[in-house]
Amino acid sequence: MELRTLHYFTVVARELNFTRAAEKLNMSQPPLSNQIKALEEELGARLFIRGKRHLELTEEGALLLRRAVQMQELADKTRQEIASLRDGMTGTIYLSMVEGQAPFLSAKWISGFREKFPRVRYNLWNGSSDDVLDRLRKGLADLAVIAAPYDTEHLEGFPVGREPWVAMLHPDHPLAKEPGDTIPLSSLVEEPLIVPSRKSRIESIRRWFGEIGAEPRVLCEMSNYMDAAALTSHGVGVSIFPQTTGVSNGLVVSKVVTCPSRTVEYILVWSKGQSPSGLTREFIRYIQDCR
Image (cartoon, rainbow, N blue to C red; front, side, top):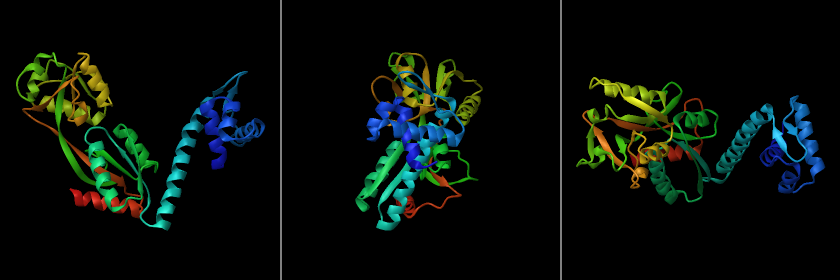
């Protein structure tokens, strides 16, 4: 499979119409149709169900679309890394990160690094821990910021920040109206809870409640803290998530959970089996000096 053919396929798969795809590619329709037919013959699978007015991806076509996007991203990343080696400290740093404090840490690093290397560009991606680590494994990210714990057998890294766990409450909730910006864990025992969906996080929360002889009433598991804040703002339940500047929006009230308190530690990681590029190593050194 050639990258050019995969690009043709990707455009057709997104447009689901040969005419529109050909217009976007600045080519006529017959050669484009022939390219797709040749790709199907090469793979021995039908990629599209051809209707009178539009196309529909087959299961094989949907799989190829996911892989084609990843391969094109990796090809772009490789070209930029080679250009960086050729031209000096230029190129693109690919950084994936979890939510919470990680985007704010990354913004601080990039702001300072740009003063030293203004020609460097950045590609930032945000998602769950599993998705972030998946991109790192596939080579679609140079570095990742995740929450501890992490796989020290396959990843190298170091701590870059920490923040406390908080309870996000509806403004009309009785606990939100109590004075102070902290709340004891015991006051959340009978509350319906919205918690992070990461398995290690749920287990940690259960152990946390176990320290006071209680069991958390988990109502909902969420991978995105903004979705959790949205549910909280409608009075669905109380969210327990790491403290994040982004939820101070007036729709919820955040209070640090104490007695006992807990913190989440953020780690900058990269794959042990892959040697970071010169640009990435320089960025890592800069972050280490910032700590």
